[in-house]
Image 1 (tube, rainbow, N blue to C red):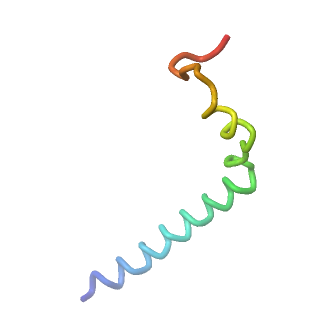
Image 2: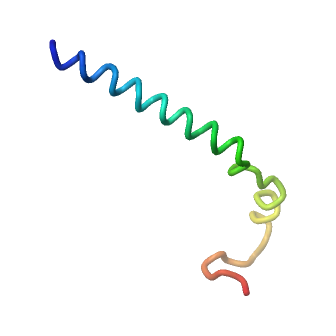
Length: 52
């Protein structure tokens, strides 16, 4: 039972850290590419090699 005194705060801290990282990614616009996603599925080019 003593291990719960350590595991509960550690798990809450890691959860809070993940939540902070998610909100940072939203704020820095990491998930914004609506035009690229919509057009990328319609092309016949494969994305294996970067375009020059």
